[in-house]
Image (tube, rainbow, N blue to C red; front, side, top):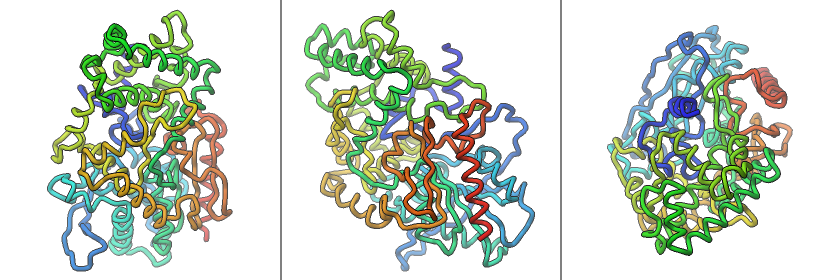
Length: 499
């Protein structure tokens, strides 16, 4: 079992000594929410080299002529040279772009069918696309979804000119998670450049207090077992009881393998909140990616069933012991020796503005975007739920202030969220030739369109699947509803290309 988990760690590209709260934080997995797909026979994959595009730093200041180099990939293996396309563009998001997506995944299957030329553009400030010398708060002013959409628009225009595409060229864009939102917004904002968009697991509603996130996590646990969620609730309540006494606190130190004794932090509400949120994240991270195919067909993975088998096993002891067993499982999976919950240590890491810092892989950048545009804070404010009430939304807003400064307070965040929803329309987005794909297990579906509101922009809601499941390579054990969704998307793309 340890060997299997070690390879899970390798496949997820998680390196040694990453603290637990950096593995899954603010609903984001280290490396980004769309994982890298891994085939059974990687030696058969075509090597796709990176290329660089000269991009504008500030698209909305006509007086600025600052430029920077943005990374992209291109695969012309299936393209027949037609000046009208089709051209497929995979939108990069809150993590490093990967050449692995250039040769596999459902969009590549579609590219083979339609003989499409394929591009992938890395999102500014993520991966190797560094627009500024560092990640200071001042420099992060250029990290916005609006700038990212303009990056995509100018990239498309440049490629149209470089490849001498016809004016009737058909660009189809693909995005999963935050890029799923960008895909829909790109079609809405630049319909003269984009013919259609596949938006997978994209949250469209900006919301400070995303309390429904853990409602979906609770519901997901019940798909495996009627008693699993109850055991989680009981275990959480037992932790609360033990924290009231010194002996209990010392038991928690040992049970949950804490890097620092919690009896020294019991009066520090931020440390306590971080501890409870991390334990909840042990379940949320697994639920969000339950049974996806990111690590390749036939590879073992930690699933909801894995966690519920532990929580339902009374031979392991009372529910708190089972919670501890889940915690150990996750620590082992990511090669961790102890659980680091210290708030000040976390804040210190996220304050590091260097491109060489651990959080520069995307943690600081995504936190900035949540603090300035989206919110998306997965709080414990939903009731009743099973993970306690120790990480309210104010805990997350305080992180914005502590990392980026006093300006980024509740009033600032509330205004920012209103602005985002005004710019894009939230769940009332008025757009055509977009398909919204969501899975019922994915907590992010609570902020997306899961029922068709306009026939020209249908929704596909896949029962029993998780985050961006339709984007990963096909597997022999994929459920029929997932395969049907992929076919439905293919038919929609065909209709957009024929328009």
